[in-house]
Image 1 (tube, helix red, strand yellow):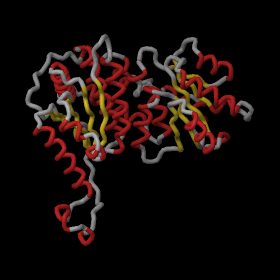
Image 2 (cartoon, one colour):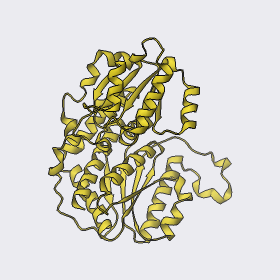
Image 3 (cartoon, one colour):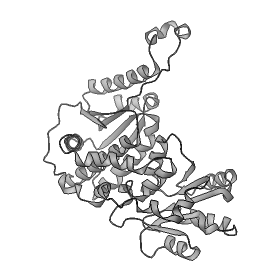
Length: 368
C-alpha cells in the first residue's frame, strides 16, 4: 500500500464527490501519456544532463515539486534551487559555484515570472563570454511569445514546451518535475507509476480521496478554514510547502479559501502546538507520518533517571510516540483530525502523494 489515510474525527458526512470529472484532465492523465518523457530522447538535453553542477531557477509550481523530489533523493547531482531575488542569496550562490562547470534550468510557465526572468538575465550577463555558453541553459516555458522564450531564441538556448493545459502548481508530473527528477538520480517512471496507481485504483485509493475531500469540506462548512499539515518527516518538509501552494492558489477565489499551514514534527510541537491546543478552535489537522525503521538507539547507560521510560526504545519508537501523543491531544480537544501513514519514502510513494492531493484539492475546490 502506497498511502493509507484514516479520518479520526467522528463528525464526517460523506459527500457526493464526482472524481471521474477530474481524472481525464491533462494534469492528472499525463501519467498515462506514453510520450510524456519525450524530452529524455533529445540529444542536446542528454549532453546537458551529463554536466557536473546544476542551478534550477523557478518559483512556486516551477520549483516546489522539484524540491520535493530532491529532498527524497539518495544520490543527486550537485543541485541548487533559486526561487527568489534576494541579493544576498544570489551573491552567496555566485561566490560558491563554479560558473564554468554549472548548467542552468530556467522554468516559468508564462515566461514572464519576474524572479525567473531576472535571474536568467543576470546569469546570462555573467557567463555570456564563456565558450559554448548557450549549451549551459535549458528553458521550460509555454510555446508562445514571452520574455523568457525571446531570451532563449536570442541566445540559441534549448527551449522545451511547458504543457499549455497544465497549471504550474499541477505540473509536477510534466517535464517541470520529471527533468529535475533525472538530475536527482531518480527514474521519472517511478514517480509516474505512483501517480498512475492512485489514478487507476478506484476501488481503494479513490475512496480514500473521497474520504479526504469529505473531511476537508466538513471542516470548511463548520468554519474550520485553516488546514494544518503536521508532517513527521524531514524529507517531506518541501512536500508541505508544495501542498500549501496547491491549496492556497486553488481555493483562494471569490472571497473564499482554505488557509494552509505547515508544521514539521516533532520540531513544531515546541512552537506551534501551544497555539493549536489552547488557541482558537478554528483549524483542522492532517498528520503525516513516514513509517521508518532504524537501528539507532541510545545506550541505557546514558539515559538519565527522569527519562527511564525511553530505555530499550529505538529512536523511531520515540519519534512515533511523539506523533501519536500529539494526535491524542488533538482528539481530546475534539478537533477534526486525519492521519496519512506513509511507508518509507520512495519515488513511487511520493508520486502517489502528489496524485492523491492534486485530486483532493481539485474536488474540494470544485465543491466549494
